[in-house]
Length: 217
Image (cartoon, rainbow, N blue to C red):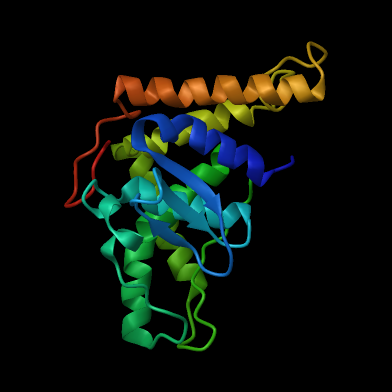
């Protein structure tokens, strides 16, 4: 299955740009979230190097951030760079469990393998397996207790666009009914519509308790 970053950008922008004034933007070395300002009408989720996985990861942070956080550069958080000691690495992993759990659900929705990210090449040795277990447990908790609304809307869009079962091609068009180009275009429209329907319904798959500075909008 092909995972074209332009498809993901089109899906995200189609679902969220109208109501949340937020776009997904291809960036350089470092990802960053930039709120709208005098020169930019839209908030921007900037992901690194055009990588599909980086885009999913940065979107997962956005789906967790509450409204006040989304008015601040990088949500008002200070990023701890590579080279973390044991204490700082533990803090880093603690705040990364939830977004990476959402990232795993996004990856599942579009049929893309997922690997946790615990990069700390110049710091203390990382127990990747233990962190993976925590992320998987958090993903199961999301499924049982409820997925945040924006995250569920993106999952709905991804599932429609990357559907492959039952004789359906990418974009949800039955094989033989359209050309490849038409299939992708129609698939984007259907997928975006699915995501917007979720936002309009303002409901996740299951009710979820709200945490501090985490909203369902």
